[in-house]
Structures are given as structure tokens and as C-alpha cells.
Amino acid sequence: MIVGDSCRWIAFDAVGTLIHPVPAAGDVYHRVAQKYGSSLAANEVARRFRQAFRDSEQGDLSHPDDGARLATSEDCEHERWRGIVSAVLDDVHDVAGCFGELFQYFAQPASWRCFREVAAVLAALDEHGYGLAIASNFDRRLHSVCDGLPELRKIGIRIISSEVGCRKPGRRFFDALVAKAGCRADEILMVGDDPANDVEGARQAGLQAVLINRKSRPDPGEIASLAELITPLES
Image (cartoon, rainbow, N blue to C red; front, side, top):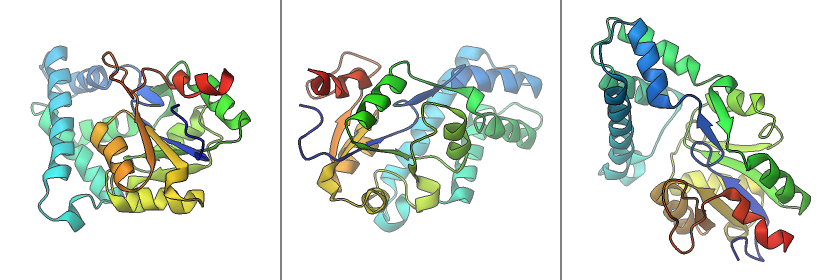
């Protein structure tokens, strides 16, 4: 059973778990970059974006100082994304202007969509009495995104790395989630699409965790859709 008998709260990662950008991030980068003089092809921009994002995440995990490696803030996240944009779009004539437009674009609710099962799943979990939370490596832009998406607007607990001062998979991030939920760590199920950040990090902090795998055939113990969270509840 995915949702254990001891579970009182279910926390969801945001991007890749509850929401996804529309159009895809690489397509948006390409469109905006063309306005600023880039001649990169769309598939090259998409490839560079995936690589730059992976490099940024890997840089967190490989930092030699455990105490500092996952520390963050609004300024840190701003600079993180500035670095990603600079790495992806190295031929634009106005890097600052291009970055500013992209940063603001992804603050808009219209730039995001919930996965199709999200509304029904959240409603069913709420009906069954589970507390719901969003726990994301993001910055304060996530508030405007969630406030503008009806499916997510009512989730009152949002643990955001830039506000906590620590990124997943850091223990301090998950401790903040536990404190806000007001329960034991093992009474929270963390659901996310990143094995290290969402699953291993949560388990190291004493939470239950499950990986949602939307990209390939799920391995045993993983789920392909959030709808699998409520199947046991409805049987």
C-alpha cells in the first residue's frame, strides 16, 4: 500500500510532480532567446537547458561542505537561474534582459499546467482527511504560480527552499516540513520525481517517500501517476 496506515500528511514536489511548464522550458528559452539575437536551434537550446539544469543540481550534491552545499536564499536562487540562462544562451546580445524576461515568465501561472490527474487526486486525499503540502526547490515565484492555479490554491502549506534556507535533499528542508505539519516525520509521505532530492532526502529525514516516474516504465515501488495514491483508498 503506497499510503501507509500511519500517514497523516502527503507532501508533493512541485515541478515534474504536480505541475509542468507549457510550452516546455527549452521551447520558451528558444523563443525568448531569438528576441535577443540568438541563432541557436531549438533542439540545441533544449539540450543545453537540460545539461545546465543537471549541472546546477549536481553542483549542490558534490559541494565538499555539508553545511553550505544546500544553503540557499532568494538571492541564491536568482543567481542560480541567471547562471543557467547564461550557460544555455551564450550568444544573446543582452544577457540581463533575456534573463529578466525568462525569470518573470516562469513566475506567471499561465506558464504552468497541472498534470491531468492532480485535481481529482488532491480532492480525494482531502476528502479522506489527509493534510496536503507542497515541498519544492524553488523561490517565492512558486506562491504566485500556486495562487493562480485553482487545483493548488487551497494547499496552505508550502515549503519552499529559498524561504527555508536549504534545498532538498537537505535535512533542514524536511525538518521545516515536519515542523509546519505538526506531526512526526514518519507520518508524512513525500511524493516527488527526483530519486535523490525527493525520495532519499525524505527517507534520510525519517519521512515515508515514493517516486513518481512519468518518463519510463516504473520500477517496483514507484508510481506512474498520482492517481495510484488514491486507488487503495477507493477500493
